Image (cartoon, rainbow, N blue to C red; front, side, top):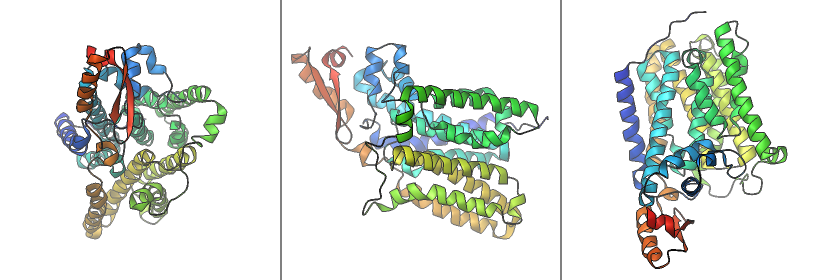
Length: 396
């Protein structure tokens, strides 16, 4: 089946990418010379001391190739600039993934404005401010969001099969639960379109293949239990709106979209199917993340992004059907979404507390001059540290 494939204009991609870049750096600016303690620097010493085979070194149990690939680039820079380099590279990866989402959704909507807004959802995701912004160890979560969204678009799969396959491969070797996002692919696999059917099967093979690799590395017992020893799965007193919204909003919103999709004339609208796809992946990601990892802000990024994008696509259909009240609905939705974006825009205390990385390296250098054979602790935000050999501090 031949379908017309819309083309996103290059000048619009550049303009959109520039906006994404400005926004992500504005969010991360206070943390750009700091490193978060949650796997923020762990991969870099391995990259400095090892060779490219460290890309396949598991952490702690499963393969995490995306973070280690970035660490290989960061290791090229002098240690004094490792924080700035890692934050900058990670920020540009988020921008690239935002443009990836934009390109995917454009194939469905053929609207440059709408598609750019959907990519912007990832860039401004409120729950990313706690520990994800500029953090090497958190790349797998926006990666998962981008791949999950691509799996929902039959048009994008036909248009960008190789690109989606590559991103899915990297995500699968970085994120053991990527397989839960394949529900839309399983539905699309029933298509009578031979080209789509073939490309969907290829993607399924990549996702399940990487899942088997991760499962063999982790072991069935650990895979079933998840992070039972360190995860938090109970609500706590005074946990606040940030945590409540991250836990419950994506799933509840997806269920609401499911209900609205059944109402006439919404159920016959243009984006009904992709909203079902996005909703199923939203719930699958939210539930699986909670079961395996518990309550953690990094697990909120992907399902929240999918939920918001499904909401944007609902508003597009709603405004087309009910033109008189469509603008009012868009206004209230904009205000509703702007509040959390503004409130949780800047990088949070977890990423901004403690000394800057450059000041820590300067302090370590003074120590290492007198103790060149020793190891030195470099403090990272908010209370962790990284042990580094003095030869590394002095040689770079």
